[in-house]
Image (cartoon, rainbow over all chains, first blue to last red; front, side):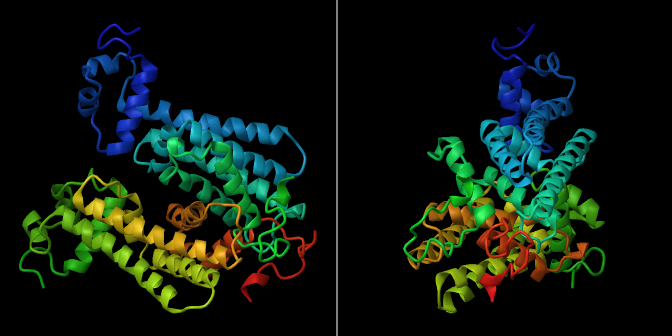
Length: 210
Length: 210
């Protein structure tokens, strides 16, 4: 596919390696020089595919953001109660996080030093806004506790989701669905054993999701 | 206090500026050269206080870790039910995070590329282990839902706490106590309006904390 460089480095595999290096070393700290050494190809072989380090970053963070916005679109179209759409969005976001872990990790570490980074932060803000609106609507429908500012609830909820990148590893045994179950159980119903369960832990702890 | 450099740069103010620069630019990406430019002092003026960039990092992350372990010690000594000690630990950790925000931020971004970073990660693991033990004990006492692995519960709980560094700013109006109230309400009781509150949101949403 490429004119120069090691066979097999198409844009996709180049992006995969670049994202891995950015996550390990930091985007700022990684030069194109270093990247070419890690890839074992020349800088011009990289420039055949992308115009700059910035373009690699843009492709990478959009991979994460596009996934999140697809789920958000689905959540919007599904209709029904806002709390169910909120749970759908949380579950779908966890799936995106698990499936595209290196991309989401990179996205969440973006600080806003360049135009590409600022554009990514703007899309993240749009996403946060959308979550806040869902929480507000769910509160108006009486399904979300009314004593906490919906923007704070939204931030705490996705703070929990985003924190998964710090420790979750797909090969660790816990699947995407199990992870989503755990997050939703705690975030929606709390870690405290409910009164209905009693001290023996009987009863269905996930009764809200039936 | 210093032999050279701008008056007023004692170790404390040097550390404050260094941590700010590390957080903005990334620890890896910041050279001592750059740091000295930002401080407006010579590199030797920095070396009067610390032996290396690494030592600045060690002092900074220990400022965060020492705070967290102090709270953990208090939580251990207070006795009583594990769930109450767990809540105490969450609240205390949020206070440390708010009071020492730049230090905790730097700590949570440490990746383990150097000996100092690996030592910090080891202390973080000790802390996580301690949280997991509290969750286990609270589960054994029937106060924590038994359907989620205590290590996962501990990670989600402190994932939520740690995610505060991403958006919380002390001048934003929300105080440390309000923040701790919101985190504990959602993490312990869930964001879902409880059955006791009904659709109007009446009743005490924080009934667990009375």
